[in-house]
Amino acid sequence: MPLKIFLDTNVLLKGFGASRGQQALPAYLTDSSVERYTFEKCIFEVYRLFRGVVGKKPSEGRGRWAEQNLKAETDPAPIGKLISQKRSGDPDVDRAYARYWINQILEAGYGIDERERLIEEFLRPEDRDVALTEITKLQQLVVDREKFDHVCNDFGDFLEKHAITKLPYASVFDITQSIEFALIHPTMLDNFVRDTLVPNEDFEIVFAALSLPADVFITDDADLITSSWSLGLNFPLSRDSFCKGDDYLATLQKVKIRKGIVDDL
Image: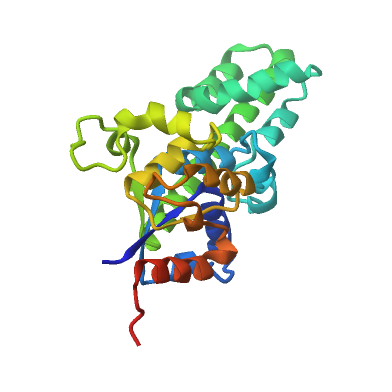
């Protein structure tokens, strides 16, 4: 039976960036001897990062990912760039404006062409320029939203291409699943939180990996790797199973030795 490896958000991003840039892919994406998994929350975090919305931990090392990797004409603008384009003179207004239209543009976009026609037909010439400037800004937001959806879909294609199975929230935290022989179960969450020091941002992700259980947990988050020591000996995923992406092959070999798995010659 193939070993199961779990991919955290940051290593998914690293692999996706390499794939888009036609660079060499990391070994955890090309290894045909294992099954690859990730958690639905990791995918949602990637979507946020496409918008330039980052987590709270510097150790994640992804604070400027969007700015550094989404540079093509077809890529969406991070939220910081959208804010800077408003230029109302009030930074708080600019931030609120950009965040409001992230969602509302889906509805407003359907009527923009009609609004432009009404402006031309009914506004005084001296008022048209200001109104049309606002329409142009909204049209740009419509295009940017389309770019955002496109890169999210590209990421979905990336997951499928590299056979990365998504663990949904609904299955990981399904309390109706049998508990009789379970090593980890949603009803054990309270004990899991009390017994470990896994950071708040990560405990759902680690719990998802435990639910497999994964044989190797790959993350470039140094704080998470350090906190994995608190898993102790009572969970099916041990500290020795956590590694950075660059250490994947060496860690996989250690896991195989521990489990008595001999590679085919």
